[in-house]
Length: 114
Length: 111
Image 1 (spheres, each protein chain N blue to C red):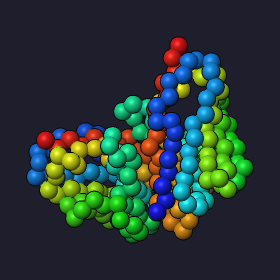
Image 2: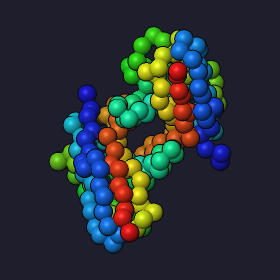
Image 3: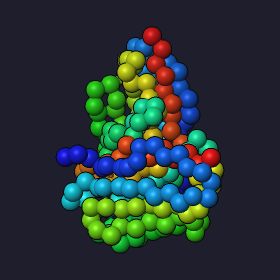
Image 4: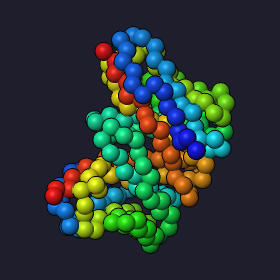
């Protein structure tokens, strides 16, 4: 079990550029979550999917953010155009049996927008 | 809207001492989780608490849940340096899977 795999680990981009973050959940997990962590706002849920279908995107801060899950083994979070206030660590998490195992988090992507 | 509060935010304690981190949540929740995060690292699952009166222990950490009081505690016994980390509690709304995190407690164990 390789765990939840996120790429890239670090991303530095200029304001206005498009940024795409990637996540591969654990095989067999049917839920996938995108979180953002900042010092000021803590851990915020952006969106989550069940069986590849977006269930709740109320945490997506604005239209510049979009997320997709084209299949059970891959999800992307895109920011277009990026702004300095988007700088944060973005975590992907997946789960299968939340009652027993909880949610497994990836290593995160540290995004810096300059 | 479910809100989760932790206290204290910062905790500095000596090795060998005992202490408790508190987690309050605002509305009925059917699950309560505790996570650990080391600086620059991901979140590691510690405990899943499902029912009123649930108690789980792993090493020097013990978590409990009081659903009537909407309170969970994480008790640290005879602290050692390698327990230094940030600890988060998180709760889930009934009927959906939105895991809402508390602010975290940054624990520093001093030799």
